[in-house]
Image 1: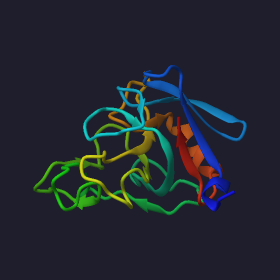
Image 2: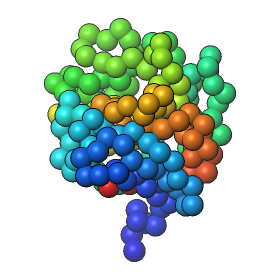
Image 3: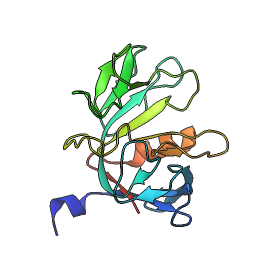
Length: 177
């Protein structure tokens, strides 16, 4: 078996094929989660609202230091700054990369007024091996109260995300199926 397959896996499953809600789990731990408004798709495209099917690495945990304590995790952790953003302009040279706000091309602000990005896990979908238009800013983050659909991310309650991160070893992968 390859090393990539031997890594611990955080499983994400939709309730139904095109559903925007599902379950996320690691070992015996399972929580409810929100998915992209278009469900899960194998061929992810920028702006399609789908969560990308496949196995993805977990790169970095970002958090709002004015709202939450530094998450306990084996993954790399960094505090979000007021000027942090993430480029989602597929023709820009920094597409699907962190940028400093304000940014001249389209970019998502990570320092948000709501609590959805109080804790953010950068998922390695189209990050290390970028392809233009194949989707950007795919994160695990805090869900809204009603588990409303995301733009392609996986979202869960803050407490559940914190518990998952505390148990996730370095090298864990997110398997969206």
